[in-house]
Image 1 (cartoon, rainbow, N blue to C red):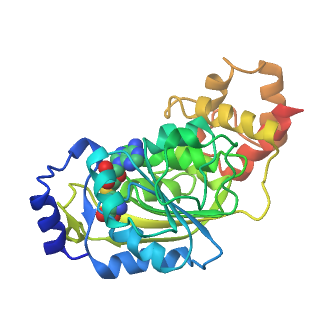
Image 2: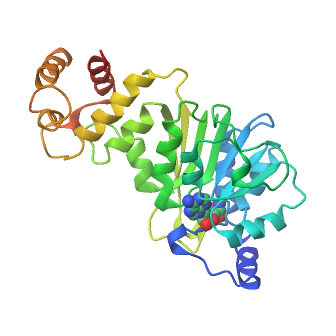
Length: 292
Ligand code: SAM
């Protein structure tokens, strides 16, 4: 879909774009193809697309032969997509808030009819054989990625276009500017071969922020069990609750001082250390100690 085709659709249907829904549509064919290539799709994959918009990415995803579940919050766009893809059996389109849909934890019906209703699903969601491929609405990109990453049956791959700064936070290393809770929540379950930048001019209208497409690959085995993971999440959220404060002081509100001192000593962490200096491995070992 070219920029002039996009403009024509928006004009003909009198569609005013909504900034709060992050409606910056990607019209650059090369960038769209790069995103799809990063997903390494085969017809046996299942694809989750969040925020299909006018469907430029959806079209390429469907061309891979894989079934696509697309969730669009804007009713006007959902109506347009229903018409555009009316004869496409491989597409399931939900008009819903994707974050709310994921939080409800129910499975979509696939492949089924081309158009279905969000309330029709009733099985618990299992995303473990799915790939998320999406140009995400920037305002909800982080919560959507965290929701999927922390799901016990998380997607095998996530290829998403994000605000550049969010991509940098996800791949950050300890003791760097972007390192924090988002880094650790995603890196616990995913590794990343990296991201590529997408110039603002590739979108209509161009966003005010820089963008990048990030690939995340699920780790072959979970590094922590379910209980340890719960403690890991509590631990890092508390440890980073005040970035400039010593971690030990912050953690005292949640765990007995004695257990904390013992863990700090065993892990070789200085009592003066701040969370931003502590790496993923140490937080993992810390969670295991607190779980015993
Ligand atoms: N995929 C299209 C593209 O690449 O041109 C559109 C991407 S645009 C950045 C984000 C899309 O997400 C918009 O179509 C917007 O309406 C939709 N959206 C925003 N918030 C959403 C939400 N919570 N759930 C589902 N879709 C959402």
